[in-house]
Image 1 (tube, rainbow, N blue to C red):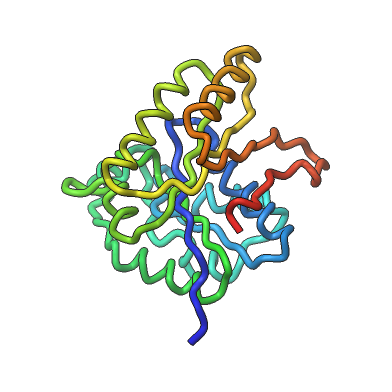
Image 2 (cartoon, helix red, strand yellow):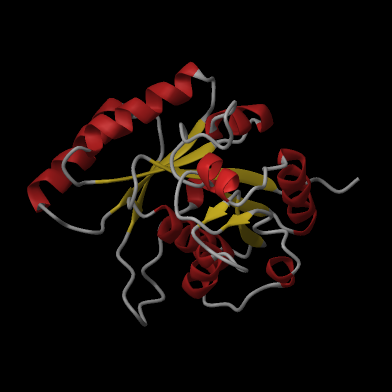
Amino acid sequence: MESLGKVYFVSGIDTGIGKTYATGMLAKAIAEQGKRVITQKMVQTGCVGSSEDIEMHRQLQGIGLTEEDRNGWTCPFIFSYPCSPHMAADRDGRSIDYGVIAAATKRLQERYDYVLLEGAGGLMVPTDHHRLTIDYVREHNYPVLLVTNGRLGSINHTLLNVEICRHYDVPIAALIYNLYPEEDAAIRQNTLDYLKERYPSLPLILLPEWTEGSGNRLPDVSALL
């Protein structure tokens, strides 16, 4: 029996931290290593018809929409209002079927070596009135790629997320350090140095700013392969 591809769950420490950007760039870097990789969105809010995040992933990867995108496997649930999944589902009069998401992920695993599953918001965001995102991650034992950056407050939010993962017994595969935007160069460098010192055994992947035409500016994903 052919083995299934590996799933990484991509989450971020805060809103606007660069989670979607990181997912697309990591997928491009993994593909550059000769691996079959696809991205998936657990739940998309604030959209109608198609997932803006999946479209952004494909743009960053430099590819068009895939067959799996068109048949809905890469984003099984899309809600119209831009808010937390539990509220978005309520407003649309729908509910999230976690079995549908898991089945779609498995289909992708059967076709690809790696699946990068991006969450909606952070790990403690509710997906319904009884479950948090991290409950789903723990249930499936997905290792987390935690996106952070060097803006003021990131140390606090990063440490909180790491402790939450420890509390829920969820493994962190790597910290993804987004170098954009550079609000304060001194804070950005100090935050990077501090996280390396505090978590010396945890892989830390630098995510360079994307510049049009700079196809060689890709993160080093060797720790994930």
